[in-house]
Length: 135
Ligand SMILES: [Zn+2]
Image (tube, rainbow, N blue to C red):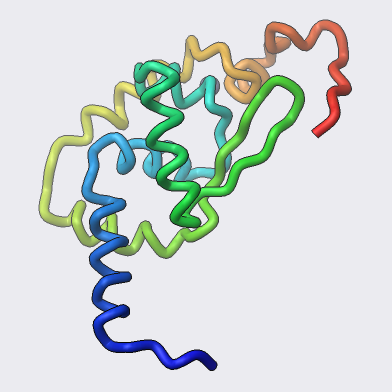
């Protein structure tokens, strides 16, 4: 096993906090807590421009916290390192409003992403004709 210097452990820990020390990235991780979501769902829930969302998703993916997969036109993200939620929950115990989480429940009712449409028993737009695109 590779010898790790003590400093590098602290640098790694600081890197984890730096990655998590951003409301947008914490919101993304909160959305992905229940499982994978497509980018269109995250856009609808968070209201971020796609470029901004992609930038935050890229940071989380490069660090190995998120994993990505494509299915047809949709890009899905899921959490690859659920350990981050232990850190987030510790920070949450400090307090704060749950208003965002309540708002998301409302937004889910009108979200047009494939998962939300199927959850409402609707056919997601663009899926009237079966898509068989290469990965
Ligand atoms: Zn959705």
